[in-house]
Image 1 (cartoon, rainbow, N blue to C red):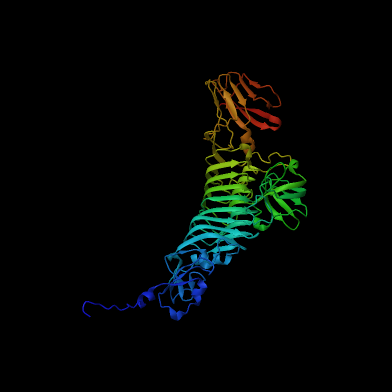
Image 2 (tube, rainbow, N blue to C red; image 1 turned 60 degrees about the horizontal axis):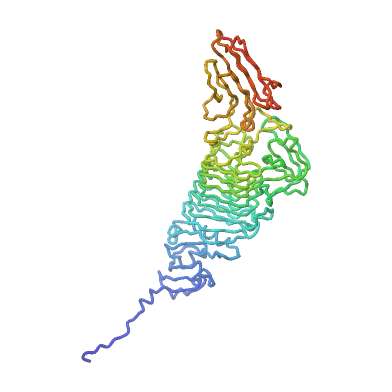
Amino acid sequence: MSGSFTSFPIPRIAAQMNRPLHVNSLQELRDYPAEKVRDDQVVIVRGHYSDKDSGGGDYIRRTDSLADNNGTHIPGWVFREGQSVTPMVFGARTQENVSSADELEAFYNFCGGNDDAPSGVARNYMLLAAGFYKTDRTVNIINCGSRTIYNDIRIDAMHAVDDIVLIKNCANAVWVGKFSAWGHRYGTSGYSMNDTVNAIALENNRNAKFCDFNCRGGSGWGIYHRSGNSNMMALGNVEGLNWGANGRSGRHHYVDVTGYVNNDVSNIRQYTTVQLSPGSVIPSRAHRMLRAFFTTKNREPYKIISINRDNNSLRVYPLIPDADQIIGQCELIIGGLLCLDAGGFTAKGTFLDCVPTRCGTGLWLTGYDSPTGRSLTSQFSGVGLALGNNPDNVFSGTSLQSTYFEMEEVAEVVHCGQTESSGFGTWLGGITAVDINALKSLSPRRPSGALATNRVYFPIMMIRRGEFWWPDADRQIVSSTNHDSSAYPVRSAYAGPHKQEYARVLRSSSELILSDASDIRRLKGVRPTDFTLYGAGGNGQYTGTFTVRATTGFTINGNADPIVLSNLTHPITLKCIMGPGNNWIVTIQEHTML
C-alpha cells in the first residue's frame, strides 16, 4: 500500500437533484409525475407545443400558484419570474394561418391581472407583445391599465370582422413600440364592402399612453374612439393605408339617388333628405356612418347627419343646392384613418404624426377640448381633415404643428361645426402645401347655391406666404384724412397681422380702390366694408376730390365708371358690399360735428 492511493466514485446525487429537467411542451410538464420533483424544482420547457420552439421557458415548482391560464400558470408550476412573457407563452401561433384570438386574450388578461397574487404576477416579468398572428374575431384587450407593455406585434384579420382589436378600460396604461392591425384584404388597393371594417376600436382609456399604430386595408376606420372616458389619452404615431372609400379610382362607394327633399330654412337647422334606390347599399353601423360625407359629381361635401335604413335614405347638411341635386350615381366618402371622439370623450388627448394614405377622411376630430397632434400628412384621401360633428355641436378647435395635403379628392379641410359656442379656433402649423380653394366650411345654403347667412364660420389660422393668415369676419376699415400722401393696405379694425386687402387707399391720388377678397368672401361670406373719410374742412370734411373705383372686371352700383366725390360739406362713411354679378353696392352716410 505504500506510495499508492485508491480512489472511490464521488456520489453525484446532489448535483443531479439540482440539474433542471427538460421537457418538450407545456402539456408534457402538466403530465410530469409530481412525486418525481421537489419544491423549487426548475424545468426547462422547449416550447408551448411539442412541434414548436416558441413559447417555452423556465418553470419553477410552486404549490401556491394562481389558477391555470395555460401559460404562465399551470397546476403546480409557475413561469419563472424575470423572463419575458409573450403571447406565444399562452399558445399563440406566430407565422401560422390559424386564429390565435383566445391565446392573445389570455396574454392580455395576464398583463392586467391581480398584483396581490402570491407569485407570478405580471409586474415581475417583461411583458412583450411580439409576433405575427391571425384572428377570426375581435381580440378584446381589456383592463390592462397601470402596466407597461412592449409591443412589436401584428394582428391580421382572417375575414371581414367589424373590429380587429378592441382596447378597453386600459386607463393609465403605458405601451411602447408599434402595434399593427391589418385587414384581411390589406394586399389589395381596391375598396370592397367585403373588407374588414375597422382595425382598432378605443374605449374608456383615460390617461393611457399608447404606442405607435399601423393599420392597413379596411372599409371603415383604422382607429376610432367608440365610447367612454378617454380624456388625456395619448397615441403615438398613427400610419394607415387604404381605409374607407375616398372617391378615387378603385375606392368608390357609389349610391343611386332617386330624389331630394329640402328642409329649406336659412340656418343650421336646414338639411336635405337624399332618397336612394332599393339596391343602393348604406354601409353598416360599424362604419360609423355619422362620420361620413355625401358628394355628387360637383365634389362638394355634405355631412351625413342621420340615416333611415327602413326607407334607404340619408339626411345631409347643409341643404344641397338645386344645381347639385344630381339624380343617378353619387358617392359616399366613408371611413378613414383616425377618428377621435366619435363617441365618448377624448378631451385634451394627443397624438404624434398622423399619416393617412388613400383613406376616406384622413383625420376627423370632434368635441369640446378636442385632441391635438404633432402633424398630419394626408395624401390621396377623400378629405384630409374634418373638424367638428353636426353643425349645432360644439367644437372648440385643435392644433397641428405641421400639416401637409396632397391630391385630396373632395377637400383638404372641411369645417363641419357651425356654432361659435366655446369655439376657440384651430391652428394649422408648418403648412407647406395648401390649396385655399380646397378649404371648406359647411355653412347654410339656399337652393340657388348662395349663402343663407351673411357670413361663413371658418375659425382656422395658419402661416401662409410668410404671414399669419385667417379668414377675417369683420371688415371695418380704418379712417383716413387728406394729410397723408402714402399708399397702404386697409386692414381690419381689430388687431390682426394679416394683409388681406378688402380695399386700398391711394393717398397721392385720393382714391379708394375696391378689390374683391375672394378667398375670404368664400370662406367667411360677405359683410359691408365701412370706410370713413374726413379731413381739414370746417366741419371736419375732406376738402379735395375723392374717387371710388373698382378693380378690373367689377362694377359699382351697376356702372363701370368710378364714383367721384367733391365739394363735401361733412365727413362721410362709405358702406361697400360685394353683391351679385361682381357688382359693388356703395352707399354714403353723412356725419354732423357735435
